[in-house]
Image 1 (cartoon, rainbow, N blue to C red):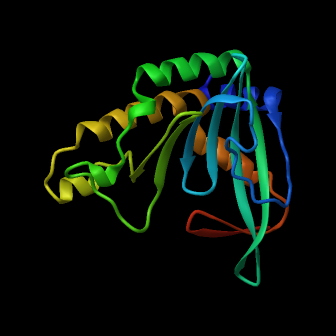
Image 2 (cartoon, rainbow, N blue to C red; image 1 turned 180 degrees about the vertical axis):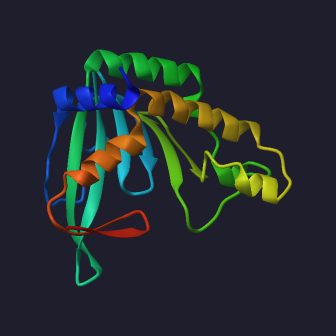
Length: 200
């Protein structure tokens, strides 16, 4: 079975779509009994949230989000889709991510020769528990172009972040998952990241 078909089947079985007009930033305040939270965020429009609770239970979601536009201006109204991840899968994924250094990633600005920019896509990996938190962001994480243009070697920490992102993306095909979400939106004008789209 092709990967896209497999993803579509999983989404069909597990999707919990919530179209709501809220500004949602899931964290400890939304999960007060959390022992540990892993978040992977693609700009402001897609998030993979993995939670381990104090009583050693697990939950998680892939969350897609767009903002409504009115007369070509962004509003505070957003449409959100939450796709539930099976609890057992969350546990397995958090264990694998932890072994690959998710909790200790270093932010691009602290890494020599790590390239950042203003446009394009930024991916942020966030770890939080009751004692500490860590955030590490990378601009155009999966692109070699700017490193080649600047004739610098890819930093090891960027390669580490790429591996972590690949572990997550291999599970959920995030680009295709977000594209499917966009296809299901009602007619209207929306924004996400730095883009504006009209759904007819």
